[in-house]
Image 1 (cartoon, rainbow, N blue to C red):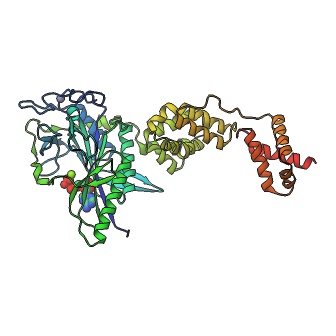
Image 2 (tube, rainbow, N blue to C red):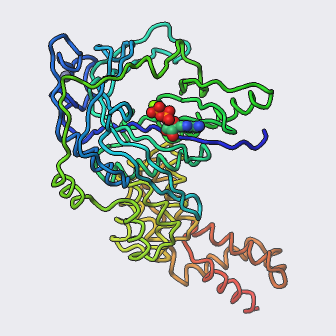
Image 3 (cartoon, rainbow, N blue to C red):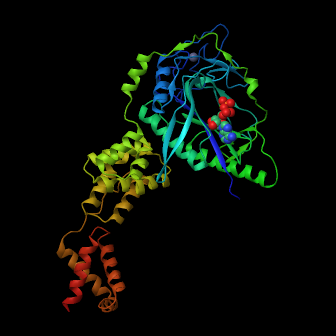
Length: 474
Ligand code: ADP
Ligand code: MG
Ligand code: ZN
């Protein structure tokens, strides 16, 4: 495939999972454990005569997000009806916001920085808005093969923050890093538990070589955003390279089959017939509320990274990787507070723990319960009680199996025991012993054999000294 100039803009929907009730009614916002269609009322089902009432805390939560993104809050903001005909919204419109034709969203402008290797990339934010979630459509098999769907209205009306970027992202990988960083900001703010299934959903717009953009709808994880965009960039590149033209289009990400598919009907902007929601008055955003929220903002990932550099002597790169996930950063800090050497512990978390979690198909949330044992293992290595290699093996066992082995090998420190082991190995390998008098490889072999007998717990330098002593004793 030739090189193509890729332009990506994201629309990221985050459920405000910190809220107890939905955006316009008092139905519970936490629908995940409930039986389908039990957390509903006349308002979120859109029954005739029902009236929405705004959940004030939802506005504050979105304002916090706006402040964290350097986005400018409006003085006055409005809700709009976005019309469409689809079973996921019983009233045939979604209460949302609009930034054209007199519409004003809660906040506009702003930016978010994220680390790209050694560089820092800035993506401009277009707007931040508040809207209601829609019902969940359940596909019994996959998006393409199901011949019927199930609809669960429990999710309809849950508060969502939609954040829209400018098309400043230049690759699928950047898109993923951007979303991971944004997700970490939401976690630090405490507005969204991004580990909950479906709490963060992305529409990704992508074009190549200045052509028309395609919108990929409803992708559920940063990893899948990268995959979907990679697929779509290749699809577009193939069309362009064959002399074809990209049509402006909405496609859906089929997460079972890992392909993007064209929808069954066309949606166009005009079809939405946006107009101001007559049942909700405009909201004035009180400057005092803004001041209070700004003063109460918790430490955010960028500030936390700076503190990690200052307080723990980490490199900018180490700090940025750790803070790109709140659970990871929390577990790391816990390990330093427990007495681990900070720089070395950072390497253990970044190089071993993250890799083991991914091998075990676990997330950083699962790390919380394992951290005390992770600390134990790294502590043993840092105190030189076991080798780094042994430590890595133990961590892998811990993270994949969920616990440490009953009996963690006790380090052999006693010099006399080690001397005996060296003597045993020499006795069992007389030829190698002869060679070792001149050949360093043979020495290494002997050390390896002794290490094996100590189950990797001894200090290799100590054994080298003992082997040398044995060689020169003759
Ligand atoms: P709206 O959906 O409100 O009409 P736009 O269509 O301009 O707004 O943009 C929607 C999203 O598409 C934004 O995230 C924006 O960054 C992105 N986008 C706009 N133009 C392009 C483009 N040429 N290539 C990729 N993404 C784009
Ligand atoms: Mg849009
Ligand atoms: Zn309701």
